Image (cartoon, rainbow, N blue to C red; front, side, top):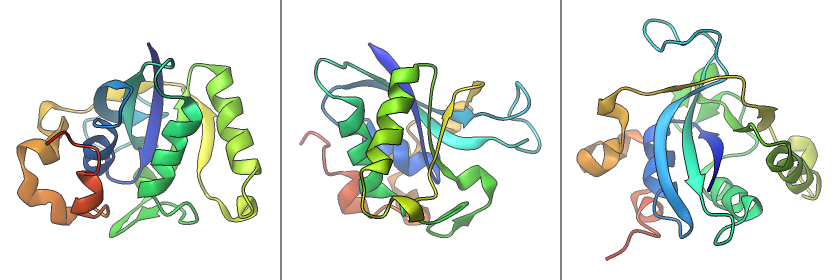
Amino acid sequence: MEDIYLAGGCLWGVQEFIKYVPGVYQTEAGRSNGLTATIHGEYDGYAECVKVTFDPSIISVQKLIDHLFEIIDPYSLNKQGNDTGVKYRTGIYSQHTHHLDIAKRYIASRNDAEKIALEVLPLTNYVPSEAIHQHHLSHYPENHSLCHIPWSLLRKYKPS
């Protein structure tokens, strides 16, 4: 198993979408690349993200990035849907250099590469979100209207 950290605006929707993708073993909502070891008070530079534990023999990093691009506006800086601010930026973070290399090549190969606002950086730190944010849309589906990702897309891979 390997871990990669995907930021795509509000972490509720990213987690609800990505957790059902075949090859994804586990997800955890959290904050990445902030300045402190806590999420209490201000966000201190964090990006809302989802820690994705996946089986690379079933799904590739490139395919995970394909899925991330399904649910984000890659041109938007610090904004996804109605959520605005630095914490809602898009990004790919990892402790594995090869994940970051794949992400950089993926973006560079696109015809719109110069317009993409998604950051690709080494993971400097990660703080899990509180329990209320873990699998939030599974527990509180009525809150899906707060998410920028359409409900039909959120349920795309969910087993029946």
